[in-house]
Amino acid sequence: MTIIRLYARALALLGPERRLAVILVIANLALAAAQFAEPILFGRIVDTLAGAQGARNTPGATPLGWGTILPPLALWVGFGLFNIGAGVLVALNADRLSHRRRLAVMADFFQHVLTLPLLFHTQTHSGRALKVMSDGSLSLGGIWLTFFREHCAAFVALFVMLPLTLVLNWRLGAVLIVLVAVFAVLTTLVLRHTESMQQSVERYRGDLAERASDALGNVAVIQSFTRIEAEARDMRAIIDRLMAAQNPILSWWAIAAIGSRASATLTILSILGVGTWLFMQGLTTVGEIVTFVNLATMLVGRLEQVVSFVNYIFLEAPRLADRLLAGLDEPVTVGTPWQLVILTGTHWSRYD
Image (cartoon, one colour):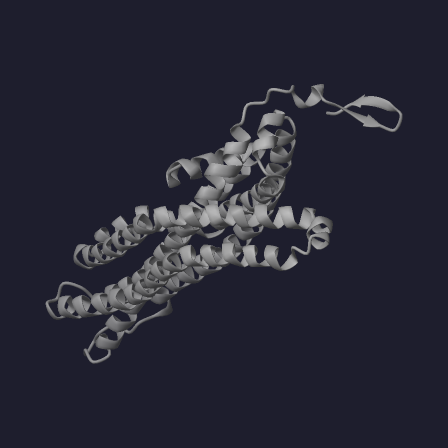
């Protein structure tokens, strides 16, 4: 299952919370716009102050008054306060949404598995099914939480706001877009390189859960046959194989993390260098340079968030796609939930 298909399926599982999800998306759009406006207004304020400083040495020039500087300053403060307040509300509702849906998906998976035929249960270890229900629901909750709390605004900033930098100054905007694109390509290469290795890691994780469940469910047998050391040795062998498969992936993502930090520094230095040259040619202002430095810092930070989000989905994708979502897709053959009955006390009652 591809990352796009996986995420589309995760959104489909929001169910009755879709209205709140749409509201959170709209709020993230507003947040992204406000965060984009802040450095622009700050650059305008810097240009105004720089112009006033130069006018001091010009005889007869009108001094800077509050009527000139106050409107952009008040607007900048207003956007900053809006970002704080809206960010708190978005984070609070995103937390509640993700936790509610995580528990609901866990309950749905549990109920669905109970209705599956015995053939499914004979072929699926109970420990593996329990791990799928627990880890899969946690992974889905993490996807919803991080997307609605942070990464939705990050996607808007990168794919909508970043091209708009060309309107401010197409030369500095082009430099910024090229640098962000290069980092995105390098991250994509890391993803593709580690894709097959991650599948092996997920298989070892399943083996680990299955082995632990077997052992803990048969403690009496293991103790009576003095199999404690043998079972512990087998468990350590699985852990060693798991770590051997996981370490190369961790190394690649460590390189990606270092690259993200380096890209932030290189982007700011590039903007400062190109901006200084353009200023000397009369093609930009000090305020625009300040604006683009702040935009570069913000956009690189957003790019790191998107990479973290994609990394999270990528690392959790096999667990979700091959286990939990596949379990939810299993056809029910033993009847619908309201047709099931359970024995309560001394009489049968319907289970709804």
